[in-house]
Picture 1 (cartoon, rainbow, N blue to C red):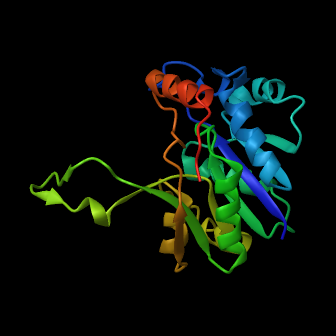
Picture 2: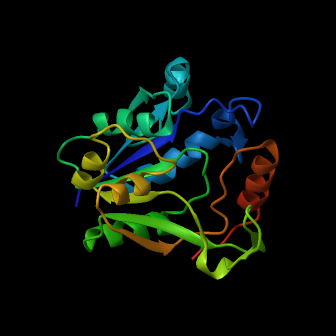
Length: 217
């Protein structure tokens, strides 16, 4: 099946304090590493960045295989995903959506997500267990065994994700929009080292994991 990945990197980086996508991670930019893995797992990649960063992103990613297009995103994450979807060919059968700020996702994780879509899932979400004790803001403990943390790449049957975005809704992730549109969501094993870089300390953690020969199944 034809697999395309939309890498979303259109955030303004306020919590990070600068452009985290261009930050160095083992000699490669954060965005470059995210896109390189996506490219190896896909037939094509569309990268979505802020309007003022399109030219810079094209320069940053110059020479990487599989980057078909860099496009500007919208005011919300969902709007940015729609901008990426518009650049994905209509012949694509599987569409993955990945956060550019998760540079340590492995090819094995992409493979698990794609395989689940190919088996017929509408939407596929990688998840990891929550290790912290949890409490509700209204009071009382929350059973952490019933809670998982959601990661990307998330995978979708192409027609399903396009339909879910047709009414131009907004959500924190695309699986939520698919579910709201009547689709079903399947979970697969995520990776504990698939950290999202939000603050400067997250970049240091990613550098340590990258340098330490991380192993994720």
